[in-house]
Length: 349
Image: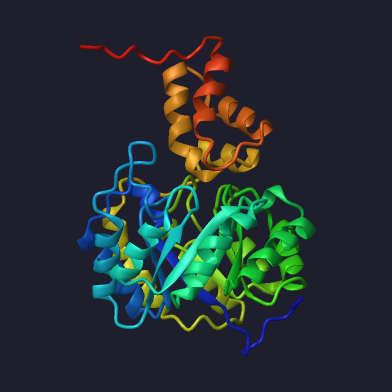
């Protein structure tokens, strides 16, 4: 474990404004928006920029939300706007297919981020090995990492390492961790794998930046953020704040802080429909340990059934729901409201 930062220590900042941040704008960034944001990040020296629908490749749908453009269109817009940065895309097995990943490669990605639930690392073997055979850099996400204690999480990470992952991420998908928990999980991975370690923070408990700093102190060298903190529910650790905080703590990020601030202030901020804040729903979501993408569907269900969002989220947390179980939101709301949700009848001709 590293306890004192010095001038030789460095972290690599990865920006996910154009993927996780899509959730904050209902996946409605245009290709022009993507190009402008990617260009600003590139000028500031961010080496990897993640681009796609907020849920990842292939997710644009009624269920997850229709995006303003296709994933290949977004990727091509970003690729055409940068001079140095790698463009990355998120691949979630069961949502995306290898055909869609090939389409992203054809559009210009050089990095893929394969995301699986923290107990299901084996689901990543096929896409990781396939992507490595195509020459891609592969970063793997262990989503909802708070649901496993450090040692079992490290065992899952070891599987990803054996498949060939270049970076394995501890991912606080629900924003449920505090710094000690983030640090312990990263430290466990550091002692178990050879791959680089990353950390992806959500800010539901207001400690995303602190979690990222603690993760780095314990061996994480890749840190995710998004400009203005855009992201699901309370959003992500804020890229420009990460850059400033790491610099003040004595770490090298090799990015231009004021270039990030300018892009956040003058390009991203005007596109935001509302501030990225920790409101009641986001806070209770993190407290209950519920996946961040449940944020908007839970608010809609609460309104439909006349319930407090906190009641629904606390019950979802008690049931241990994970990403992909969004249908449970209506089930839980219906039960709490004391009535059965009835599917509307479909007229026949």
